[in-house]
Length: 194
Image (cartoon, rainbow, N blue to C red; front, side, top):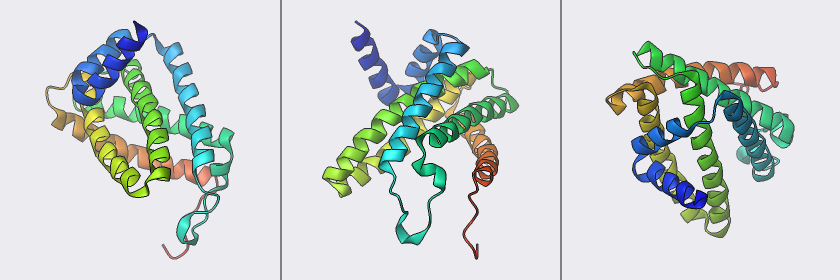
């Protein structure tokens, strides 16, 4: 029963994202459970990236030290996920949306869980066939933006995805500021000459 519900929700997320968003919002268990789920996803993301990212970046650019430290990577991922939720909530409200922090938290947790599963699958695919893995990653990346926009539109009660796109762009700008601040805290500086 639960596996059927989960399978249907995944299919709806990919094929009918607005309907899936409504379902996720309808069964969100509450802020404490969602924050715990966010922390779990952040830990899993941190572990995944610590294993998946190379020790040295191609083209000689050094990777930040925290990339090979799963705990720091998990903390970084959690902070980014929370900042994303805050900015999507605020930017939607600026545009007249009705989404609450808890609503955006629920959809973000669901989408991040799916993204993690997808990233693991794409990584395995890229090991077997780099070209096919890259193509799947590109298609999934574009499609995931469409899914996110539909989820944001549903959470904020927007009638169109266009308004969700504006909220997304505002949120990305805010998130870019937070990201640059966080990277500075972790000691990551822009390359010399930039």
